[in-house]
Amino acid sequence: MKIVMLNGQSHKGSTYNIGRLIANKIEGETEITEFFFPKDLKHFCVGCYNCIEDASDCPYYDEKKLIIDAIDKADILIVTTPTYCMHMSAPLKSFFDLTFDLWMSHRPMESMFKKKAIIVSTAAGTGTKSAIKDVEDCLFYLGIPKIYKFGIAVQAMNWDGVAPNKKEKIEKKADMLALKISKTTVPAVGIKTRFMFSMMKMMQKKGWNSSPIETQYWKEKGWLDGKKPWGRG
Image (cartoon, rainbow, N blue to C red; front, side, top):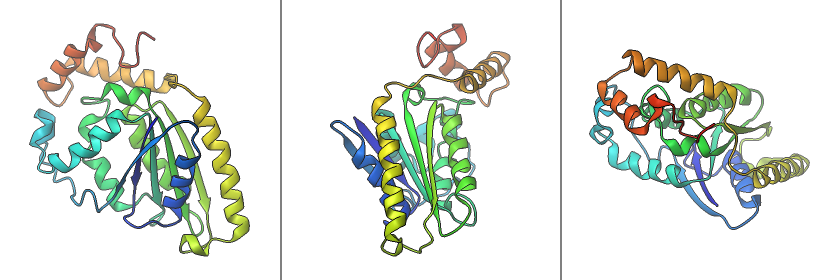
């Protein structure tokens, strides 16, 4: 099983350690690939819209492609972000900004509709819910149908400072989540994703898209003729 971790910080703090703990507990033979932001992608989207016509025309295509290719091959995506001012970290947001051309409204990747994702966020106090919601919105529009969430106030500035009883609680929660993920095969695509995909299909048919290139992409996939990226359902 291939796991990709997208980490919203370049250092290995509490959020990273919890994400890695879950990854290590997933049953079976696993291969874990990690990316850290901003270390592995230092750029902000400049709004040039080159990617709408041709993904390879993005000024940061080569760096971005390494990450996207790894995600494409992964079975499970683990996204970790500390809570920065009540939301996801800026470096992680920059990565998602640079992948908007892969959203359902543009040229979604078929593989996304077959993945499971876990979002991990920590804070010293409050804010993990809003940080997780930021990431959840992005993953939903990328097409990922099953998203698990793990948010916790660690009441510490680093992993070493987390109290033993808090770490014990984290360990138990990680055990339960890893077991759930291990027992789930390809996730079912829910009503919300199906509805959004149908709306985007209508948009493509009516020409309300960003570019004829996108409509051609949907035609080639057969999605305008009834096929679905997740199969027949």
